Length: 97
Image (cartoon, rainbow, N blue to C red; front, side):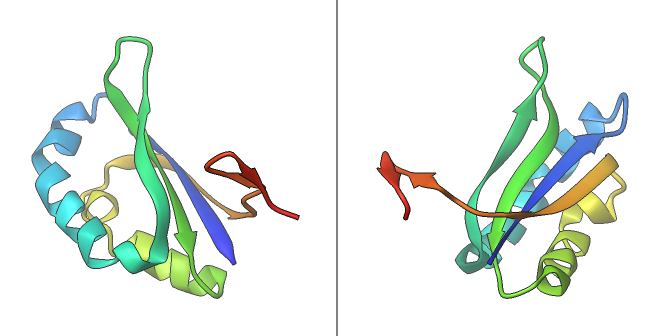
């Protein structure tokens, strides 16, 4: 099953994001077997202001555990967090049945 994290940074938290980014990327590498895709949300000025990660895991509890252990979450970067069940319908131009 897939779960999508949609996390918005707290206002004015770009410096936290920049400082923690190396640890965050290392963490994502360490859990990459559980990630379908991931990347930042970009604001109108072209700056990152949040994160989207789609996890391929068996249940919400595992996704929540992975999110809580992310260095961004531990640093208090996120102001609003949503974890939603997600189903991929189109991947690389191929429509799933």
